[in-house]
Length: 140
Ligand code: ZN
Image (tube, rainbow, N blue to C red):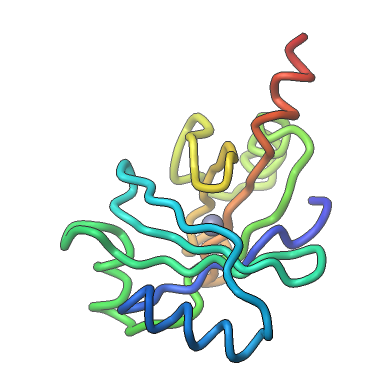
């Protein structure tokens, strides 16, 4: 793990949350992106080396909608930047962590991502993420 890439926060309303975080951080969001496969609309704020990712559900069966109905809005996951997501996934498996997806999938912000089940990670949903550009460099 190289750094905390971002902290994901589940929100009820992305526009209201954008205004709140703009006031808090003193900067505007750097992008808004919809990830239809996950049923979310996201916005990112750059804070030094790391980001805040706000996540709003776009459908009632989105994981974010389920999270909010159970726990309310708030911190949803911590994402670590990794150099080689396949190697990191194997290392986590070897350490006994339960991965939610068997293969990396495409997430927001041009990343390959994999989630680690909170039941195996002390109650915290962990995301591993790797920039997609770096995957190409490795393959060439
Ligand atoms: Zn994330």
